[in-house]
Image (cartoon, rainbow, N blue to C red; front, side, top):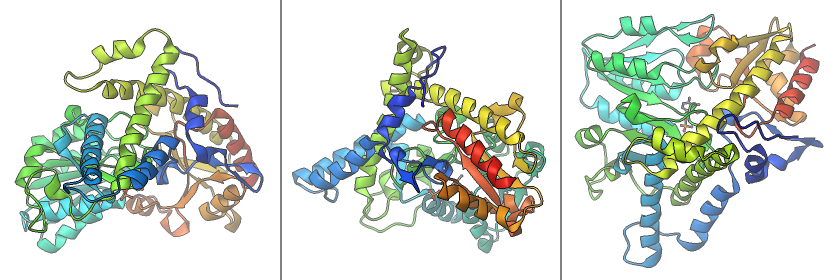
Length: 443
Ligand SMILES: Cc1ncc(COP(=O)(O)O)c(C=O)c1O
């Protein structure tokens, strides 16, 4: 049974959390479903479902019209921008909505690339999802040189020294991931952004995988751009881009003429997915509510204390509640991750890719890539994911678009990895059941 954790910190109210997500009560072949596919997309709480259907049933309209539902739509968009500004700690006009992170990144690479040509360099990494690689590789056709930061294959961390050595006065942009969607490594992004700026380059951060696991603070990071996808943190299928105001104003988007030059709208083309944007406010509010519940379980007014200590001046109480939420999420996920990794280490035929030393768990998310040593055809990542799926455990297999990593680790041709992704709605009991199932399957 899910348990509420001891309250030595902002503690996750797990029964409350699980009650928010209708999908968690499903069964497959008589087995309760265990969602370990969060890195591919998380489940959504009821408030997100209600916000989406509420918008469609009440306010469905285009923007800028002189009538009630259109005005409501304008107000809804303003509210969603404010919610994402709280989530990322920036101004509302620095928030750009788009269909997904990949589309937003292509839009930005095309705009940035307008001013680049032979002699300019862009630095990408082997650890990243391809959505933060291919949009930059596309600029090779303009004569831009793409350079690659390598990894330490032993623990699947970024080789920051190699990255630093590849920066020079020609580097125009460094594209980095906050955390790896394949092996869970959290990169030292703040340090890398500092290095990029010291070389005179822009820093473009893919925070898609980090989003559900940790508090993002673009002001503290000082990144130029940061992209995330709300469907990875309990919201609808949408992408969000933060861009520093000066860049959103200076760069030239490819856009239709009637669209205003005001930011952020000049970056949002055509009609947006309004119903999903209504769901974005709800998913940010869900995380804030989780923080309020977590702080409530401390019973010592901790949220109040945090709001004055941890909250940068000028931001809202919602941000303070999210600080508490991510503290609780972090603690809960780390306990689950310790349990899972300790259990997987006991299975001799299994190899875990990435950091496995508990002393270094602050450098990783609870996203695990595993494979069976000398695998048979019944033990490929796809075969294991299929058998686990039949037993109600939803995992993923393959490269999940972290193509450069699977190629570098030489697992691409043999099926990639089996990915087990924990998020805060998972329980210790689910981890134990998974360990039992995996042990049986790989024997
Ligand atoms: C780390 C990472 N970056 C980028 C993406 C692409 O995101 P989107 O589907 O919003 O384009 C994903 C999707 O899985 C991802 O995990």
